[in-house]
Length: 154
Image 1 (cartoon, rainbow, N blue to C red):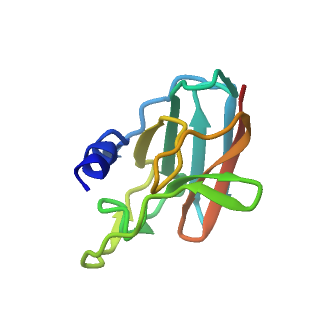
Image 2: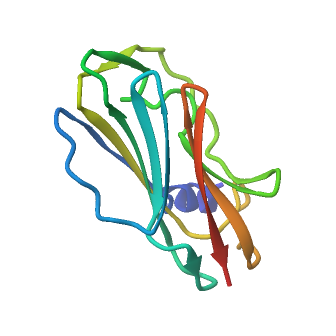
């Protein structure tokens, strides 16, 4: 049990919060975005190919591209589940478990954004076994909108 607590703490998932004006992200070759109802959903990784045993740096951002306030949902708490997860084919490899909390509603101001960042240490959840070399999909999903990029681990 203690080992699992230590391993959970080693997952670096943090939310830089919501900003009234979005600072530009460093340009990444491996990124994707989708837009729905005036909100842009964006995900990027720092590379598209990684050596086995490395760290994948992931940024997920929601930006209100409209001129009115938009309901994002419960972004400050990110709801019951993390918006970032890892898949291989149709199988979830890494997805943080849901956590109970009181549901809140959060509105994003025009041109404002919310960021979440995660460092994935190339392991599975919940058993923290190293993944095998191969192609993985990094997914960001909130409000039923998915955006994803593929990465290769060699």
